[in-house]
Every structure is written in structure tokens, then in C-alpha cells.
Image 1: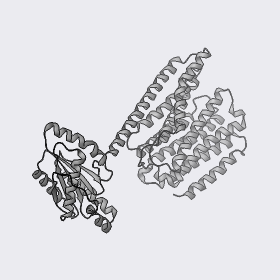
Image 2: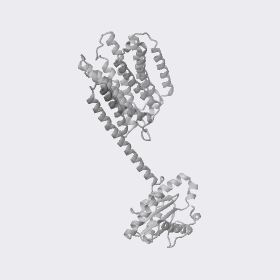
Image 3: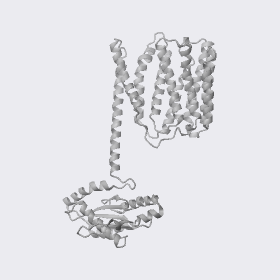
Image 4: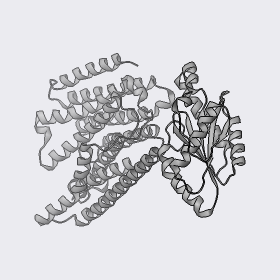
Length: 490
């Protein structure tokens, strides 16, 4: 698969599309040209699918089936009209035309399942909003008139209704695709454009028909509408042959795209369709679809409320995540200095109320700068991660370990004597990974000093541990001792 194949197919198809404007005004000529372009798209999709891994082919096979059925409908329609003289709905071509919608929808569903292993409820609500909003429009101007058409058989009415329902299904799946996560290469946008073209073509035909314009009598409009569908065929073929088709079903690393301004405007417009229709029918005294419009308005209201609830929950999750990150060290996952400074006054207050002793220990990896210089910063980061993990496991469940900064850590040991604190810290020293050691100084709270004073005493003890040879645990004295930062380097 390569860009050359996609470009060659695109060039040939573009030539065929331009030539379509020049062929004779003959139903047979036009039908044959359309069928050739349609079958060419089917062949391109099948060829592109054959270049993919077996597990990636199923969506493309369904796309090919939908295109084949729709293009075959053109051939059957011309034969029914010109040879069998069957023009009344339903014709033998209608089932073939209609296969496009469920086949493409199923292909998109399989594609989305691979792109998003987890269900995207927000995207489903957005798709439902578009489908319901435009669904009430289709009901008022297409479905209801077809359902109450005088002289039409039940089967003819069902077929007339099936087309707008198929368009709504295609629109919902298109919205779902645009709101999905996953990679977004050229093939993604070609498929989206193709689905949009099919929807625009059907909508144009319906609008012109409701306006009483017979497009068969207007060459420019007739061929212009045909071109929309022929372009839709061709875009599927380009998508299948493009190299990015290999990545189309790849799940994205990040979340689904955010709601863009155009998408928000489109969703707002979709939610306003029902009340606007109700208002128009009220003003013109032609309120015949009141119940359907009211039901659609209620469903749209519930969808909007659901979407708002999803957005609120997402904001709450993000706020909680930010709060967690602000209190958590990114490298080790331990509480950071901010979290420690927030929690230590509360811990001392609880110890004072309960009369429980509490010890604060400062821990500093020995010769860390030398380790970094020798093995590199990635190795230094790995040492910090592994050391913090084994230290945390060696402490008791009631103890708290936090990263104070750089290679320096701090621990809160509640309910222990000096002797017990030494034993705990010595045990922790023994499990330090990669053959490294640490120096530690600890101080028992006297019940009156501030958190800062307590930490300063533990820090002074750490300084003495560094001065007296490293790889040891030293208890603090009763007086606050000054800290010499130079002694702690390494």
C-alpha cells in the first residue's frame, strides 16, 4: 500500500468524474458511468483491505458491501425503468440502495470498537443529540408525509421511511466517528467526508423534491446531485488505498478530542430544531406534529442534561487529579514537600491530643551526585524510584514517607521511642537498592516545638550522620542545631 496507489486511483476517478459532465444525456450512459465509478470504488476498497492485517479487514469489507449494493441498485434501477417499465415505489433497486446504510454503519461500528476499547459515553450522547434533532426535522418533512401518503402501499411507505432513517443512522455514526479517540490520518478524514457526502446528497434530493423541483428536468442540478454521490463512492476508495488506513483502527494514547466551537454550535443548533419547528407550526396554525415535536424536545432536554452532567463529572475528575498531582511527587509517587507541610501540623496536633510520641526522620541518599555522574541521570531517577518503593515497604503501615526534595526524604514515625525509631530506620537502611546507603537523622517531638523546629533538629542530626561517615542513623539533641548545606552534598 502506498501513496502512489491512492494518487493514481484519485487521478483516474477525478478524470471519470469530470468526464461524467460531458457524456450524452442518456439514462443508459449515465447509469453505466455511475456503476463503473461505484464498482471502481468497491475494487479499490477490497484492494486496500487486502494489504491490511487480517484483523483489520472486517470494517472495509462492510464498506465494500455497502458500496457494491448501492452501485448495483443503479444498474437494477435503470433496467427496471427502461426494460421492465417499473417506476412505482418500491422498485427492485430499493433494497440494494438501502444496503449502503446498515453496511457502512456496521463498518464504522467495528472501526470504532477497535479505536476505542472503552465505551465513550460522551460521544454517544453527542451522536444521539444530532440524530434526535435532525430526526424530528426528518419526521415533519419526510417520514410523516410518507407514512400518511394517500394511494401508496404499506411497503412503499416503509421504503420511503427507510431512506431518511438510514441517513439518520449514517449521521449518528459519522458524529460518533468524529468524536472518537484514536489516530486521525488522511484515511480518517476521507471516510468522514464520504459519509458526509452521502448524507448531503440524500438531503439535497429530499429538499429539492419537497420544493417541487424535478431534478430530471434540470441537467445541471441533476448531474450536480449525481456528482455528490459519485464523489462519496470515490472517497471511500481513496481512504482504503491511502497508507494511513493501516493506522485507522489504532487506539489513541490520549482521550477523545474536546468539544470544538463548531461542534458546540452544531449541537446547539440540533437541540433548537424541535422548539423552532414547534414555534413555526404554532405561528402558521399548522400544528400537526405537536406530539412528536414535544417528545423530541423532551429527549433532547434529557440528552443536554446528561451531557452537562458528564462535563461536570469530568471537571470534578480533573480537579481531583490536579489536587492529587499538586501533593504527589511525579517521579516516586510519594507525597511531596507541599503535602508534607500541609499534613505535619495536623499530625502533631493529633499526637498532642492523644499523648502519643512522634518521631520525624530526615533521610538522604549517600553519594547520589557521584552515582548520577557515573551512571547518568536516568539511572539516578531509577535509584530514587526503587529506593522510595522499598523504603516505603519496610516502614510500618502507620508511617509516612515523603520526598522532601532531590535525594532527600522525610518520614513521620508515630508512637515510637528513640530505640524503636533506630530499629525501623536501620531496617530501612538495609534494604536500600543497588548497593547504596543513606544517612538519617531523627528527632522526637518534645510536645511544644513547632513543625519547623522539629524538622530542623532532625536535619541537624542528618548533618552529623553525614559528618561522621554516612550510612548511619543519628538521633538529634534537644537543642536546634544549625545546618551546613555543603556537608550534605553527595
